[in-house]
Length: 251
Image (cartoon, rainbow, N blue to C red; front, side, top):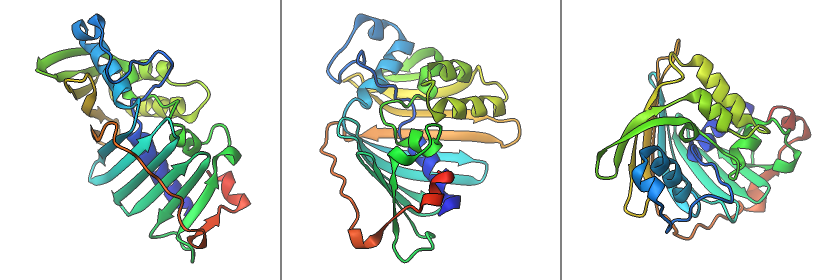
């Protein structure tokens, strides 16, 4: 199980990439003159609209020959989330309040689900930050240029260093972005493409980070099911075991 924690963290980070919730975020039905006139603002506000309520996301991350594929659904207000990956291996994670449940085919346990108490994780834990739906910030926070190339279709560039500045200072996401920026050949010019629907919501986002040694890191996300009910249930108690005390040293 220990070796799968990075996979879980990456999957959850991808699921909520670009989300930066705050009290000033626009609602799904709101609009503004600035977002209509400014493509950068349109995308940033559009991502906030997309993730302000329930949503389903399909995503893939490619690093050289390796690919991670995942599907997730979440309700930030209710603090529930469910994500499954099919590659490089099957994994499922659920979040209900402060309880996280992780299931893998290679758990090595008689009980397939491991329960993690998020309140016991270290403040700098990447896994804890990945489950923190209200404080995630990703590439979208660093967008510096954008142009509309078709109705609702945009292309532009993002600055990973600016994304770092926009990230929360008290979690692991900032450290993760800083590490990615160090790997990138040109962290100030990451190309991206995005689409925004008639309601002002981002429905797709893709970007490519050319790295110095790992080849291209290609991320693609599609969002749908806005406003649809999201129900996440805890696994059966008989199939669940609590994470051992020593495990929290590695989470």
